[in-house]
Image 1: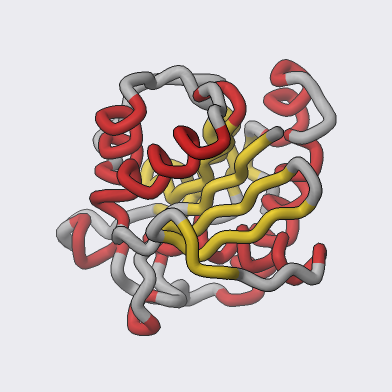
Image 2: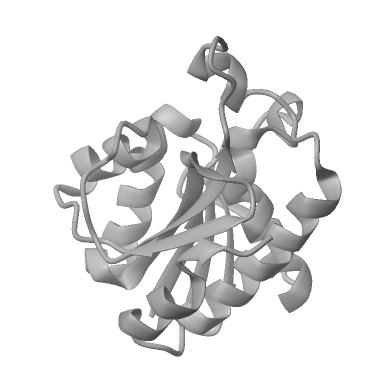
Length: 182
């Protein structure tokens, strides 16, 4: 069993913001698989065979609460989850798989590490940069994307990358996806 977790903020006002790119990727996956969401684990949740899809409603900075509930209920190991989230250090059009690592200053990842007690879980970072020099990070991540066409290409590619995550080893994933695509 594998869990695919998209990070974001649940309110409609955040729907198209850079910080919600994890939710956007999961929306593409849900649409392709024709799945409906239910309310479970303080999240929007869907199950497709042995694939679990989770969009935490706990807001970005407390994402770990929802992730921990899912992991505990299904008795998953950290290596059984894939967390999809925004990365301001990567340009829009870039994807990056990581097998494990630090929080890199991302509060959603920091919360997950704290709540599950491990940093050994796979991640898919989706580039949302570059951040303008004089703009505070919190303002930048809460802005809508300006290049909607490029964003749509990125979301489609990221959803394909998640399919590959379910079928390929990490070396192949990284060599195929860890670059700027558009």
